[in-house]
Image (cartoon, rainbow, N blue to C red; front, side, top):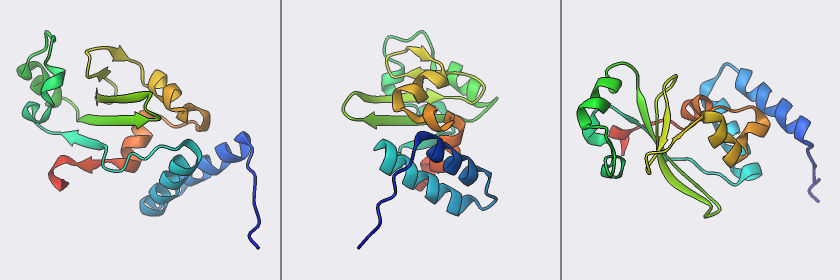
Length: 144
């Protein structure tokens, strides 16, 4: 007979903090992915990709936008940019462009704070930031 263990929110936060502080990236990523999937019903495998050229940005980001491919390329020359597709409970189904220390923009051209997005996903409860998700789920666009 399997024993059922119930975790409180503080227990979950402690577990996540311990996992984040571990040195080994691969086991850490596996453990966090498991927690995020089981406790928050979020699976971001294959949903975060690094953008290396403006031509890799989906055309939806240029629709009704004053930004040009050259604008994006100039930003890409400064810092990496990531394409993130969030899908949760049919409530949140959008693509976002994220640049660490820069901005988070959805496919409709709206700019958001990273904390707002983490609140929508519920991941703020365990202290995760968007950069943490990138560290865990990052997949090069060339690996597809």
